[in-house]
Length: 444
Image (cartoon, rainbow, N blue to C red; front, side, top):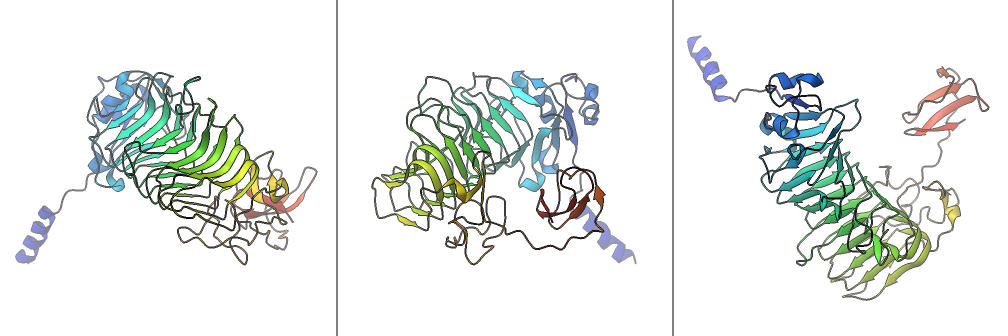
């Protein structure tokens, strides 16, 4: 008995203690003189006053969090800035420090010269649900250099003097975010990109990128073909290029293995604005399953590429030109695209609903892509006999018998799960409704 107890005791002593993650709060009515223990209260008056002070309490290895109450934060101690102070690193996203707004409140705004400057010194960091405002003084509202494995999720990036997000850190993910109104009037088309990416193994997905003075997404490394294996997918890119000149929604310049797919690129209507550019010694680029509409210049242009790009399964209409190859190394693979598409291919181009109609020429006309098997909204491909062309895979409305025992309602809920049914009892179109896809109702 004693021997067994000793074994258990030794085993317990050999195991690291499990330490619960702590959350530290920041508020405009807080005080940095509040202790770290006090700042774990969600009550604003008990919080820290500055982001820097709250981060000073945190330990990434425990998965700690810094939650910022709604408000506007303008002190340099509110910037998330490794050039000024230490931010703890994690060893994986499971134990990373998270810096975010407070759930259920309006997003806080961090405004000023360097809202986010991760100039080395940190890895595995999560930043969520914050508005970063460069106040037209920050060269880049978000800048990362030598700070790998950082996740930006649900952030808003605005008012940079030059670039909204400048990524020079590998394995950065930017998702579910809004990047707009970056750049400066009159500084030309090389200024004011929404996203300027010079890193490798980055993922840019599910973002809304618009009204930037330069390009929407500029994938470029001036030092040469160093960045590799970047993914640009399922973004809305529209209305960029306010400075005029030659601009594009998405450019891929230098680098290798970049995948550009399932993006919606539309209303690039400023002078010289194009859709996708594959350019200057880029190698192994694939631009597939994208939807492009209402583009002043070329919808997809290629020039000076280092190896032949692939352009497949893209649909485009109302373009200055469709797909133009200005020459490079090798012969591009261009197939299974719909060019000069009429608006009748889409549900409603005026409201930017680019889902495919039942009569679209894009239906079942694509080819299988090895890198992915879903569309812009994660619908599995194919739904029919073959892949559909463009960012959307059409879901035929299922035949569903009305279930009159479904719950009655006086208004259709704003959200629903596939297969859910309700009976609408009032209004001009009462009756049974089924949820065909998440948050989309259809009357039976």
